[in-house]
Length: 352
Length: 271
Image (cartoon, rainbow over the protein chains, first blue to last red):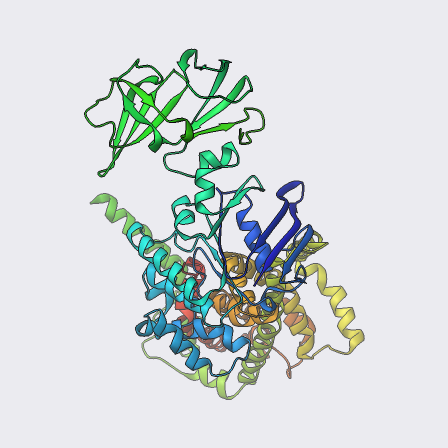
């Protein structure tokens, strides 16, 4: 099902939860809406589900305006963060409930088939409170899948699972969506989930859509400073620099020789991903010099916190910092194609 | 040691304080009539069932008990559905005048019932409802509505809104959500509310005496008060009637104890 938001807004009294939103979701697409709490992502999902009405604007399913279609008539299924299983019903009754309400035929067969597919036949006669977190999540999924909806909505469905289970569940979810080819909108604040699951990611902040794109686009070409800082762990290193002449720039008062063409503005924000920095001896030419103040050892790699000035601290990720220790002075080198530039006032990406 | 001892002494005192009137009544009910007024009071040497025989077999008291039961049950059946609907509406929807409605219900809650007697009597007299159960059922339902209403609001508020959302997305109408999801999940609250209403009606005296003094509709509480002989007050019969009137409540409380405790302690909604 193709979905289109057209200038959709949502206001609660005087607060605006959603600024005019324009977004197209393709048929069969897995779209992840990424944002922190209060970004408007859950509001967007509730409007999609029909649980809340937009203040203005239109929502289209295919070419049909569905602003006033009640949730039960939208053919949309939603998996909730806390699963929202009916505690007074057995698992079987939970799953069969949407079919019973819709008076669908051969409901027993459908439930059995769905339960087999998700490998949870043994759970059917249990009550939700007897299930583990992962099992509950499966039941919630089964209840959503059993009626074969046109649109699948998920509100942080994995956030209540422990870390290891989350990774396997993520894989299953993606596989399931591929097989069924259902248009899926998945809301999360976890950028790792967003990058691994999404065909495209829509990043939201303070009720505004910041960027829509494939995981790769979002990571490689963040459209503004918010996206650059939000996607990636640790976040992108950013610092305001001033450009005095075409061959060098000043970062926190320190002049750095820079051999390639810089943007033609005087003040600009420079951004570099932590994994794109390489370590060289301090005070070499063409490097930024700083002091290692802290190191996080992560096993396969480590994250070093490098203090360039009192106010600018950058991260360095990878194995490059091996052999150094806290307090060492190091040089950070980067290649010109790994740089991102942003306007310091608007925060928008500068391409040049 | 001393602390523990004094604590138990205190408990014993409280126990005595609250149980002794009941014991007195129980004893009075089984004393032979001659010993009832004896001073100082004595423990009877042998027990007599005369008072019970009088009350249960030779007086219209069983009829009063039935009246009490029917009127209390009818009140429960009127109050609970009404307040459940209202509580669901207030808990889940916002609408114009919601605050005003709540305000009016609180006013109803705080109204002293004695102030209503005269007006209601006139009303029921005009309707020809005096000595008809309808007058009591109406009055009790109205008086109990605020209590059950607020109790159920509290209960429904505790049911996560996601339950409603899930049901709506599963294709339920609001009424189906109410019926299949909210009502079962609020069941412990509904049961404890129902018991509170039942006990209120069972105990009620003022309206029962005013609106239904006739033997045909007299309630047990009034029946006890009107137990009077020509020359003396039959204390034994009154005591026996008091015991008889307490027993059904004890049975109800024991039977539903689980729900009442559950209702008072938890939302019964597991994540």
